[in-house]
Length: 84
Image (cartoon, rainbow, N blue to C red; front, side):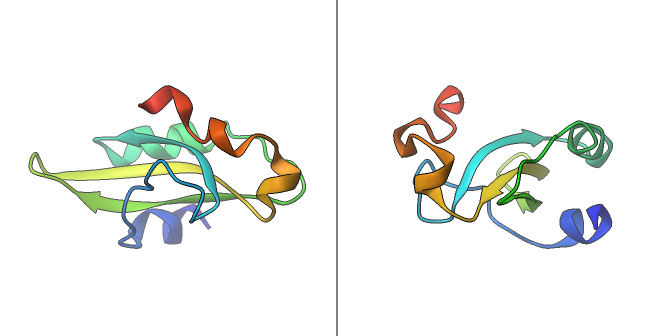
């Protein structure tokens, strides 16, 4: 699962609720992203999300949590609030 997760070109989420990704972190190395993903504990209705993306510096990998139902998850205004 993780191998597929980090080989898919997928843009880093925006600070909106449109994509149902509620929390994510960005890493410059694949090994850091994989290590972080190993420690994510998911509840029912939550799934590991992530991918590879690029910016002006180079490649980056992101990993986070995607939820089935934002209303069940909680406060939509708190989507990755700490990353702003």
